[in-house]
Length: 66
Length: 184
Ligand SMILES: [Zn+2]
Image (cartoon, rainbow over all chains, first blue to last red; front, side, top):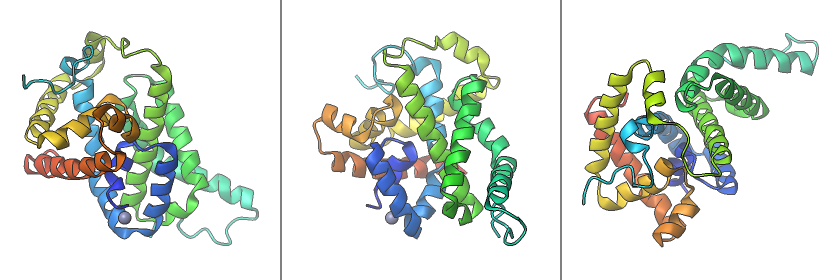
């Protein structure tokens, strides 16, 4: 259950799982602490999403290793 | 002491008045910072960002037990709630593939373009130094606005595996970015 915190903070869980994790969060201090630590990481990934070189077409954003 | 719930007991004549007061305090405490934050992920769509903030704070108010948490945890939770609302909105908007948002416009609307480009490079570098498995799940979920289940299907691995790889991958990424002095 604890490993759901990354998926939760990124917002990539299905609705049901998202809610289930939120209930877990209410009582799990470990996940609360990790949520605080990870809270701004998605914003850093957004830098990548928003950078012009990575918004093009169907290529994976990180496809530099061919 | 939590700034949101402070000492409210007995100060209000009705539950409605108290509820109203709490929403006002929520806005006061978190509205501004949240709006600044959300604007970054809605492009320059201020109206959309304001809607997201409003919905986030309404949800916060409905889950008021969580407002007794420490401020740093409340903030982390609010960011997560808001991000989820933005992602949902984006998924609804882009029934078509991402043909919207021409990059040039994006660049121009961002005031600190060069700083952003730099930190995008730092993040890209960090991602590259992750293991293939870790990079792959980050790429196929968050970076493409996909859920765990969708990514699992595409990658042909169980959702639980995606979830746990994502966890270790994100932790590793966080460590790398912290070493580079990017993460707080
Ligand atoms: Zn936990």
